[in-house]
Structures are given as structure tokens and as C-alpha cells.
Length: 230
Image (cartoon, rainbow, N blue to C red):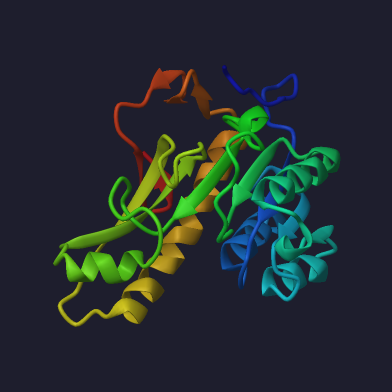
């Protein structure tokens, strides 16, 4: 299956309606908002949703007049019921792409089946290394020379979908979890914006489970270099 998005007659991208899911502070959401408001990102953020009513990401969205949704997982019988309800709201928002930006829940495979190729996630590691939590700690414990972040299409496998692009930073001898995370965060923001932009402009798509860029099969993830995907 191939997902494509609309362009105007002169091949300029129309604003791609996106929904952003976040559980916490929403710094990646803020990066998307800033890029959009600066005229650098052809998207329309039609919904910001969270599993935590107190999430700062929701307050950030409200400050920019973006519709928000908070669903309490405890109000549902199980994870599947929560996920199907969440994606029903997303569907009715008109979103064509879902961006997981610090959304700390594993999504039900059936709930996202109809959205294959239209959900991406940003993860703070050089996938396939360090899926799951505590990625900075694990990279330090392993003695890695570099660390990074990845944006990937979401599948039923935790942090296991096809990787679109990565950004890399060196690990310094004096780094701890906090300093490493702080240095990586700015690069995460740039990476996510660049990937959403590439999808919105039709450069990147998932076809039959494989990432394509500019019509060519990606043999390895794109890299963010000076703010540009190469």
C-alpha cells in the first residue's frame, strides 16, 4: 500500500492535516508549531491529543488555538478500547498523518491497521538500538561513541517500524543522562520537522512496507545534516 498526499497544480504541497499525540511537555510539538507559523512547514495541526489531561503539550496547543483532546485510559475497559476511541477522534479531525511526539503508550495493532504509512514516531536512539525506555542511560552504559534519534513509521512492533531518518551526536566523556538528553533534544526537533516536511511535500512515503524517498527505495535511513535530510 502506498500513501500519497495532495499537491496543487504547480506541485506545491497543500497544507497536510496532521494530528499530534503527546504525553508530556510537548517540546517536539512546539517545534512543529514554530516551523508551521514561520511558514517553513506545510501542515495544518488539526488536533493535539494526550492520555494525560495535565500534559503541558495540551496547554501549548490551546495557546495556539489548536483543538485538543484528553482521554483518560482508566475510563476504558482496556487498551484496545482506548486506542480505537482515540483513532475515531483522529479520523473525525480530518488528519491524514499522525505524529507521535512523546506519546508514551503502545498502540493496539488493530487500531492502527487502517493508518499504516500514515503514523510516524520520534524515538531517542539510533534504531534498531535501544527500543523502549531509558535510551540515554543504555547508550552510556554500553560505552557507545555516538547517540541519536530516529523517526520511523509506526507498526505493531514497538519502535520497530521502517526508519525514515536519523540524527547523530557524539557522546562526550563527561556526559550523563541529563546532558546527553539535552544535547540531543534540539536535534530531535530538527529531525522531526524535516521528516514531517518531507512527507507533506510528497518526498517520503511508505510503499509495501518499505520507505521511499524521491521515488527511490531507501537502502538506509536518511541523515539529518545541517538541518537537511540527505
